[in-house]
Length: 130
Image 1: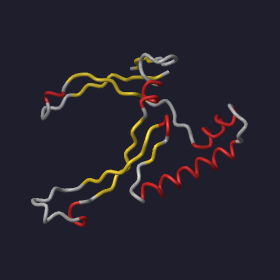
Image 2: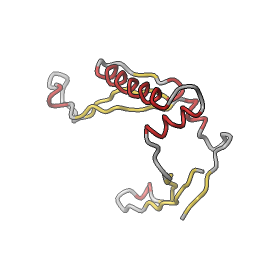
Image 3: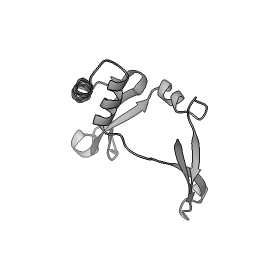
Image 4: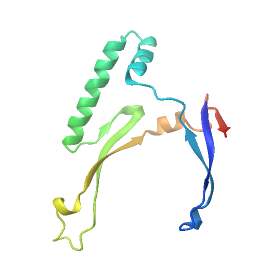
């Protein structure tokens, strides 16, 4: 069950964005160990084997991202890097030291994952909570 809470946005500085919206209330968080245990129930791979594979996946994702690659995780989605920082006035004045403050990892869900949790997907139930 997906729980949604109604949230009022009321900011005098941005009145064009004022009104009511919904926010997902996360019920719980599944640990890696729990996910590995659940995976092992549905196939012949043990919980320990699943954790080992997920740990190896983590290490390989880091390695790929550090080498400037994006990472496709199949139906889960993909990972890629972006950078943020202040703008330079000219192309000649732009440099890494002054114009890159942060490297970010961005996750993009796959279309299959988005469809699986859409309002029209089988088994998706939404309830508004107070």
